[in-house]
Length: 418
Image 1: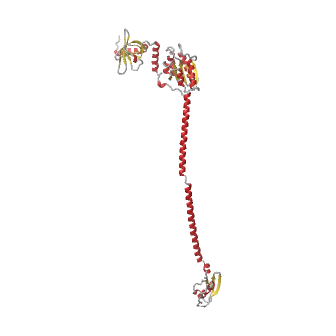
Image 2: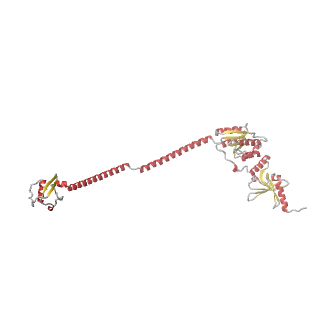
Image 3: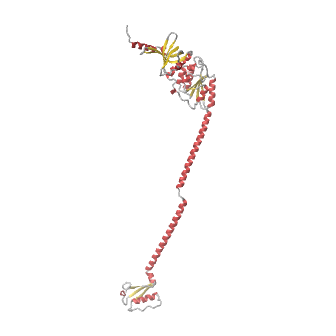
């Protein structure tokens, strides 16, 4: 017969416990005793009846840990675990509920824990509802008042929306698959922008179809955002936990999925007023900028009156300068004219002078040596030429006191010269 080590035996026991389906999903009814809560918040206690006891461990934060009390009777859910290093068997409790809770409540809590572990309730996966849906799908009974209430609220708040009903029974045995199929049908058609799953209030048994796994998984699989509205405000189902949004009542769900027309009209009025103010402000701002620009342009334009005065002053200066220049030029011209007249031989002859030229030699007689007795002379006077012959008179007669004619004066001067 083989001999086993302690580790081999404890490993076998541990594997056996972990492979047993009963021991891994177990509800136990018993009285709490020896309760001890550690500094970390974990609870250590025993569950006992009149014959035996079971060591239990409940970690901090597990559902129902706050109801544990010595002497109290609870229904606890969990699994049997074998702790090999210590060789002890413990009941690892994850749910504790007061004694007297029905089988449905226990089943509901067990399913809730399993779906939660799978992530169906994860907040991060929940989607935002569309702000302005065109089509709202409704999964509910066609004969009840729920659909009528939803359509009334939708029509009053947002008349533009279209409502599509996917009818299904919502109460009775085995209606959960029908609810899931109606939801899946709306989602596959793709017409609805948001889906409301709804029914009126009732007991836990009446609402039980919305606690079944098939409905929960249909909501989880929907590509369209889902709003749950099951029962009254105090009712809470698994469908509520899986849905993207939970509404306390069907009418409240209708209010959640569409905007309020009155609010929209007020918002439009506010937007129009804000737009008017913004446009007015922009116009005033542009008007102020334009006025400043015009003032700046005006300040940089020339002062026409000042420039007109400057032009007039420059004109007067130029005119005065031109007049002075003309007067100076005229004076200069007159002076030159006088000088030219003084140099004009004709003018000299007109004053009584004459030019005597030796005809033979062509020399202008300016000295006596230029003429010999008997030389033919040409005497030029103001009004013509006089022919003469040089004589022998060495001395000229003295001039008389009375004024003589210019011609006579020239003749006497010539005689003196001769």
